Length: 134
Image (cartoon, rainbow, N blue to C red; front, top):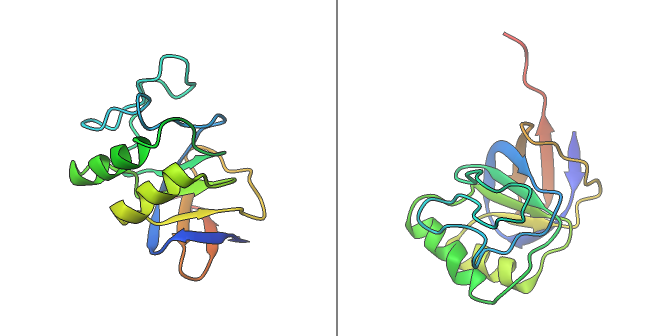
């Protein structure tokens, strides 16, 4: 199933979806060394975002969050891609400087954690891939 979206940061990524029902603050909310959610009030507290397709409504918090996303990439613990319902400038800049594919404004926003998702930011679409049973 292809879902149209808008490119924020170019590139292609695929992997397991990790969906947050709430906005994410990268500064103070994500450990830049481990990529574990450390915000005590966040529903994903304790979850690692490394190598996931991170899906959340929007970002929140300090502009330092852009640098935290870049640090995640430098530390090799960044998500493979980012999908937001509505991109905010902090997450957008972070994804761009870190070279993480990012899209927003998908036609549908009913993703589930564990789904296998492909982002083609350059061509502005997302695919949810059904895994065949072995």
